[in-house]
Image: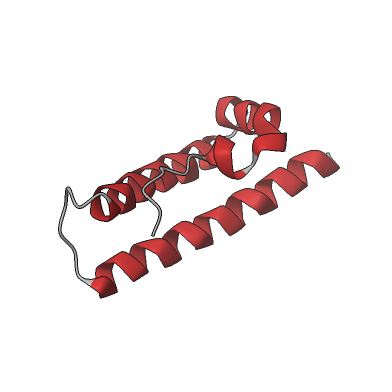
Length: 82
């Protein structure tokens, strides 16, 4: 269990510039990024024991976070190809 918040720049450190460009130019990316931030913040609160949650809820949030990370990785790959 990690008590470290995982922002997108920490997850994709080599792609900080692309993340920044996507956030500025792509509304869908902004929406996905905001959703990731919300889910990640909730996971962090649960892991830090600030907020209580069932194991099922915690695992569901982690799965959602992974799905979003996959989507962000695909967006980064597409941006690199362009």
